[in-house]
Image (cartoon, rainbow, N blue to C red; front, top):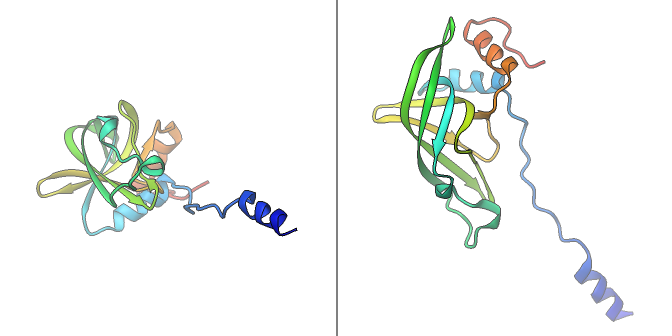
Length: 158
């Protein structure tokens, strides 16, 4: 009997670790970054980076650092009251945060909607494991929603 209990204890599933995140939305992100003390620019464009510079997260041994800086470029247009009209082509720093084994991520060559922080020495995007600062392959509805937020129109999630 003791051997059976020991065997059961060894094969029983271990408690799963999970990161609980609220699904990101452009409306919540706009409100968050609009209320921030720092200056932000909303950009729709193509992100280029070397994905090998990103932390590996779940598969890394030893675990990744809490913050990894990754050089990237973002080319597209920034948001104005008339839409995504102002050309934007800048070198940026991705500030990729990890919480335990979960890390933020980005994909090379992806079409993105990004909330880019403008610092005295350049541009940066904080990329956390729960998302909210970069939206990959944004749908037209997302672009319309963020424009409505800028124009102080209906800035609510459906």
